[in-house]
Length: 501
Image 1: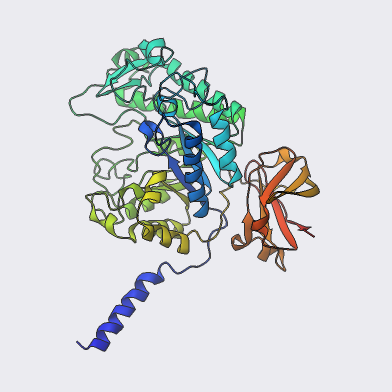
Image 2: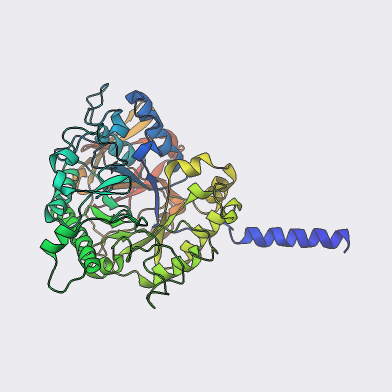
């Protein structure tokens, strides 16, 4: 084979490999999320004993990184194991935030969660409060639990399983307790969503028994077996959680991120073509297909942390399966960049593995976005992955999907004036409370052209009742801008034009 032919084949292969990532039209609406895991300080805070100023810098560092990548949603774990990252009437302060469970932050009286939500919103990102509903302790160490932890306040709610204690999902009072926790969060904080992870009933441990027999005997329906009773308990939790969220603030979203395999096809013809050792339906007693059918979810994020062609659980096949089986809800795909170059599955050594997954999801008309686990993973991995994503998939901003399919609103806060304050411009409006977010566009000749995602300049959330503030540098000397408002459900108003000189 001649040198010229070898060169030709090499270049042809290079062109082919890059063509799939050729920058093209990007969606105006797409959920781009990242999970911020706080349990055992996976992502944040880096150390619970750090001073509050250090914790703030580290949180802002995560936000700034993902803002640069044009992500638009942070899913932050605020309840890890019967605790809270905020002052709560139902749980002690988390040791992962303050260094000692039950003790408030010692170097600040500021409400840290309020600050986190505000800073997230300033960057045009939604804030979803992530709760682990049933894990009561992370290990068997109960000596360091606060006296007001439910382990001591309600010992009859606890079940030991493996190396942890769990709340008993079969007790109605436990479900009501979770509903109270959601009510407190939704009413006290300007969050955009309540989010449950995949830990419903615990993953099965060989030769261990989850001893909920007394509750089963008391609450089972006639003829109801243990497995169906457990699933009914999860159904009840999801229904109550959805309803209490909507009863308090209808615009706040409720979503779950279940384990990625509902059932294997070997046990149910409706299942996926996988050979997962455990499944959401049979081991965790969770039936997200029913929850979607009943309309109890605003969105679902199946955790598909496997590589594209893995034989036992192909990411590609599972995206197809969830796409075909998701109803009445928005479908986002959970991706696992934590596996990059750190997994026995060598497919994750490919710099194209994660981009291939994003491309595959985006090509599926039933998929509305992606969420990455976990926040620090991509940030700490090789820059080559980040470069591909930034250049080819997240080159332009995107708004999050609407949570209501109603007609877009024409209600507009009324513009009053503007003022230059340091390196920012404050735009003053009347009735800002009717809106959730302000979207600033580069003005083009037509409205259709103006509202394209490539023209988005800034998209801050409304964090002040009187004005919206953006950096002067973002406007790059423009003489005019166009702008719209998003209401609390994400519906976009008609654009208006504003002269800056």
